[in-house]
Length: 126
Image (cartoon, rainbow, N blue to C red; front, side, top):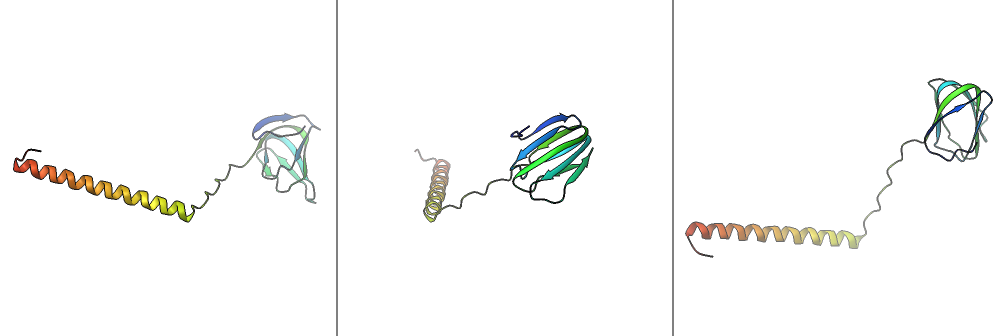
């Protein structure tokens, strides 16, 4: 069985196989049963029992074999946030101008409001 899904619970009968291709970063968590995990190019195979998990750490072919009837969960680690691109000098300059224009507008608005308030207190008509 090819696994191209990101998260799913599944059942493997004894002798059942799951085949992963380039699943580096995906993992398997065992709810019940016993699994044997092997990865292409890795001399160390892993046996997993209920409550244990394994994350594939190599590209290439990986195989999960059920040594006993097993319930398992196939998962991917949480996505890492992608770094945001740094703004260019022009973008920074435009942002600074917008901020300056906004600050000037707020200062003028505040001054006009204070002036109108002062004129009202003097009883002048606007």
